[in-house]
Amino acid sequence: MRADLPVVPDRDTAREWLSSELQRPEYAERESLLQRLINWVLEWFTSIEWPATSMSGPQLGIVVAVIAAVVLLIAWLIAGPVQLGRNRARSAEVLDTDDARTAAQMRAAADAAASSGDWRTASVERFRAVVRSMEERVIIEPRPGRTAQEAAADAGLRLPAQAAGLHAGADLFDGVEYGDRVATAADDADLRALDAAVTAARPEVAA
Image (tube, rainbow, N blue to C red; front, side):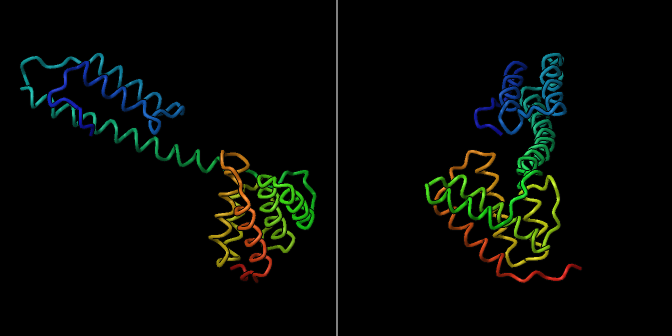
């Protein structure tokens, strides 16, 4: 609850407070369901007939505070899964369907990029090499459209000791390829280590 909320808000104050709260980034999603909720709440606050004499000032303030808390809770419950879904959807496709290169060729591309200081390309190509090498070893089945996080999850079932590193690599790949993360030499070194660890690992037999 905001510290500057009046003890006894009038209609305009309550509407202004709710409007500003609901327009915060965590609530201001573009998904239609949440947007309809926001619009409905603001319209409802505009049209509500506030009691003039049936409630005392403190009582009215409590009612408004409770209503605001319930509305914000509903908005959070909707925005939370929405945001989670959006985050999951951001995971990038690792391998293009027409990319027929071997893991060795992808490693070579990563090495060439690293030698010129192109850490973005080096990181992206090196994680692709990790995924392609796992396909070549039949640790994971080749699957068009598989995202970085899906590849990490699938491989983690067969390589549990490398699961954390695979997810970290997937996070790096997503952040560099589709986010605003700036790749560094350290990132490329981490992926080199991941590639070596995955290559040396013996997969568990699938249940």
